[in-house]
Image (tube, rainbow, N blue to C red; front, side, top):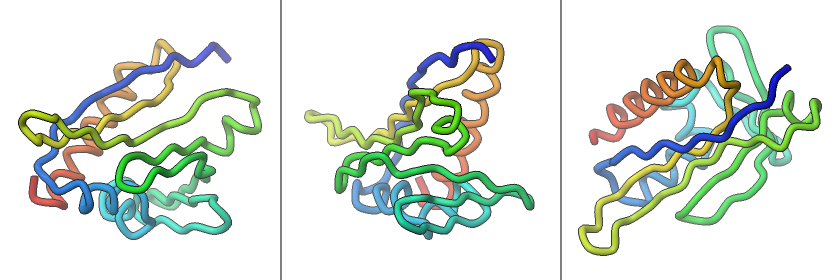
Length: 129
């Protein structure tokens, strides 16, 4: 397996930070746009899509600001990868943006970015952004 590369994406989201934070940090919020269903037990989130599931450990959570997860498979493989949702507010305009930090193998980078674009499109539709 080749090394995964870190990348970041930024999406403008017309939403209050409290609504957006709820959508990225709670099982009920995540199940509205990120996965078909989400459960949590002892800081491990279980994500379900079309009969498949993956688990991610909650690494850090800053109230109203960010949430960072690491896939259990990456933990088992000893990788230092993670995916993070961070809320950024422009000081001048008060525009709200959602920053995504993730890792992908070089040959899967374009596909990974397209997947996030689709996921964030779903998020925006759910919150009416």
